[in-house]
Length: 463
Image (cartoon, rainbow, N blue to C red; front, side, top):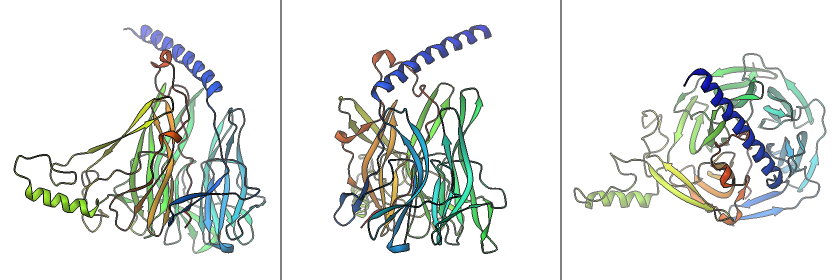
């Protein structure tokens, strides 16, 4: 086909896609609703129960905010920013308010202080000494958007904001990055997501995989400096929407996320449920691998001794020719639609770079164990050496599914995940309606731009 024919075909395809997009927008305006919450729940580890805590005058409903717990005043939960959208999507705006939940008295207070960050979502905030340090995020309106790389400090003693002006070359504007405090008193920023306008009505998203260190210069808290970091080890693959928590050994724990594959008229994502650790002391990444339950390993060893040559296939975790293991879960929607979630569990030791026992491998090789399904924007918390993973979202075709399951993992033993609350098909929240048969041929993801998978935030689990 000549160039002219190709152009005509491409033009007809674009017109067809545009028509379908208009139809889908019309559908969503009739059927799809978004619900935001300002509810507070506490998970009791010993009783294995969730409890809703009703406290008067909470912050307005929102998502994509940041929440940080500090020990001051008997324990405080600080919340900044985020975004609001009405159920029908007609109202949307970003917050720039600051709230504190006094845990001792169970009271909310809005703290009004001038000179703080502008309204935004997808930013990151950490507690550093007696301050809150905030970085990045984005602001979006109906006509335009902007990503930030500014840094602000909030003093927990004077309740005042100050904008920092670090020297050196820092991160480019982004949202949804990793931000964590190192044992040496610095602050690490890794990865994140941003997008830019490449031509009219066409945006290009970028998954960042660079790392920077922000620290006080010469020990002065009023003067900061950025330094580019080049960590060694087994690094996470590029992604956004990952979740972060601090492990007991002061390493930063990194879980899940999504890698969006963008094409001119489509967007599809590969979701992850893997674990990585970043050791700031050694400036090194490690891939988190599970050993498998001890009882299972003993059974496998006995099985290998008793199994005759040419017998059945060795159990998962056997040495030599072990391959990936696929675990399949099915979620049934209220309309009867069955969505299959497939997890491919790679044999330990078969992924990543070669590693030595004392340096690259946190754990000995063992059996893969099913845990949380691949997802982005999960909530993480570490308590008493246990990692808790709650909720998140994943996509199945053109459906977006929110999750409410809860899993835990002993970070000292690193043996196997334990499901505390399984996925309940009756409570699955479908964020998008299934297309009718006449729309089934449509290219997945053609209805819009890049989804922002970076609205997760860290939260703590209660005792």
